[in-house]
Image (tube, rainbow, N blue to C red):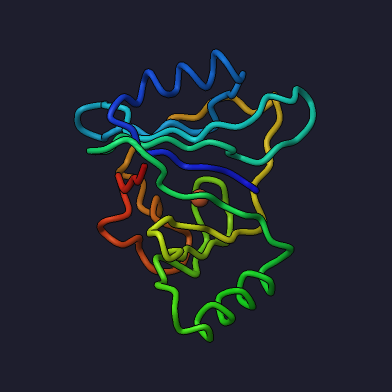
Amino acid sequence: MAHAVLATTELEATLAWYRENLGLTCSDDVHDEESGELLMSFNRLDRGEDFVDHHVMFAMRGPVSGLNHFAFEVADIDDVMTGHEYLISKEKYDHVWGVGRHSLGDQVFDYWFDPYKRVHEHNTDNAVFNNQVPANKVTNSQDDLGGQWGPPPPDFFLGYGIP
Ligand SMILES: [Fe+2]
């Protein structure tokens, strides 16, 4: 398992809990260009000099609190595409988003619904950071925030959360 993403109505409190109790550290905080409000935050493990994935927990402000998606790391880009074609062939799962490459975190991604409307991501080629990489702040005006390539996210997905 690579990471979990949460939607939350209490973003600052959620981030404080994970950082204070589990020692997570900020990779990227995304703020609204105009208001400065914190919109979402990517957080990683703190393993000192050892390199870890860009995020193990990502939280976004939303109208509800719940699980946005889980991500599972697969071997390589061929594995992402093989999985994509396999799930299409089953003709019983709904595709959500992808295939593309994220900007923050660099992963090649593919998102699918399971039968219970949970979203599962398969990804590969994560950016890895260690404690020499400072917390980064960006704004939602960054042109490629939706991805380096691939389709834009579906409208419902930002802020999506299920119990
Ligand atoms: Fe993800």
